[in-house]
Length: 242
Image (cartoon, rainbow, N blue to C red; front, side):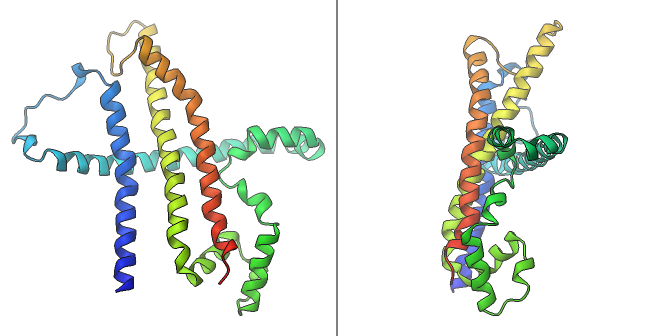
């Protein structure tokens, strides 16, 4: 019975995890998209029959799109940061002030930055000793994610707490992705307007331009919140040894 309930919880988390970002994307684009480019209601059957159910399905499917773009964003962001780090490697190693500034403004944006200090912390050392004492071999060769998986399997009670922080992290990440899409769309619209195009696929004007500008400053704030919750979700298993 317990396994069935756990499976049901995971299923619900999965549905909600895709539904929320998809629904958010749908709301945002419904707000910023002009009505003149809307698809006419001229189909084989009446879509109104499905009404709310159709919105749920579309939101769920759009959630996969947002997830895909978010993964693409994270991978490319990590690649760019790693490339910058390689180019300034000598200066980072020799100049402590430059290293501190680099990590604060650039390096900390890498998705795995949290691991650098944490892997040498007393918490991880205690976890390694704990696993060694419980009969696990080659613990010193294990990566953090391998240790984390073992610790979570030993203590299923912490799953809900971990999933909660992971969920919060995902929400912040997907919101930043959606706002990024909006900002890119607004930039394309501005460029088309400068070239004299009369095609408008996104609303512009005083209020909307102000919102798009505001989104540019909100995106990094959402990214910082995402990294905080993500690092917490990764550290929890190391702090609850059983």
